[in-house]
Image (cartoon, rainbow, N blue to C red; front, side):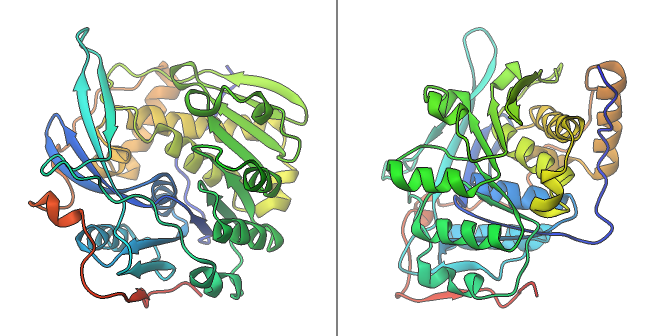
Length: 359
């Protein structure tokens, strides 16, 4: 295998990453108890990029409720910009329950639930930003280097178009297709189309999409395959001797990839060589493999600092496997005690965004 540098290297000058899409509160029922974490694909990728040294600015619509407070507090704790995170009393913050279990063969697995384990009610779902709520972004002079989106809405399509016109590298990671016309618009707007074989591999048109410069299809434990300049190639997954949870693996792969190739925006991306792409994707795969040793989509961040991650990645590169790790099993934030408080929006119909803002 060609030697690939897997070390975390922060940017000397912070680059701006923006994104819109699924932002939610994850409640993880795991081996060490129940804990909460700001989640959702878009939310995860933005937090991961902030951890990697970017100025990360997610945009989305969450409730003025306890679940929204939890997300907001965690964003502030890890240094995520919150000026375009709209708090709206007319909606409830999305919540997802993740249950980590073992199969009869002793293998670790997880499943998601969208109903409250206490009362059985349906938990709040994704509610997109409106175009009016996105207007401050569309009318701003911000110039992101990368833009990530995972949901197709009128506002997300407008923002993706705006980001592309400002020179950002646009990555689209769909969870589903929905209406064909808006989906095709999203594909046409992105430079990178990334999707999971488990979710969308049954759609052959995705792999043959002409507009994206790069198409990435993730294959779980079998790694991924990519199409660059008309040619397909494959990258095997890294192996880990300890496996707890695969949740968040795709998000780590996306964040690691953007971290390596995104600093010079779309123009820099267009000039990359195949070896540069492989290095970026392998870096994302390595972070994903390391994260599989912990419960939760961002367990890596909860229990390790950059120095310990780099030590583990050196072991992965030199020995082909990850060394044993010692880590704290306690959550960084306390878990709300009454889950039913999180199911319903509270208060009157108002909306606001944080005063904290990039500029």
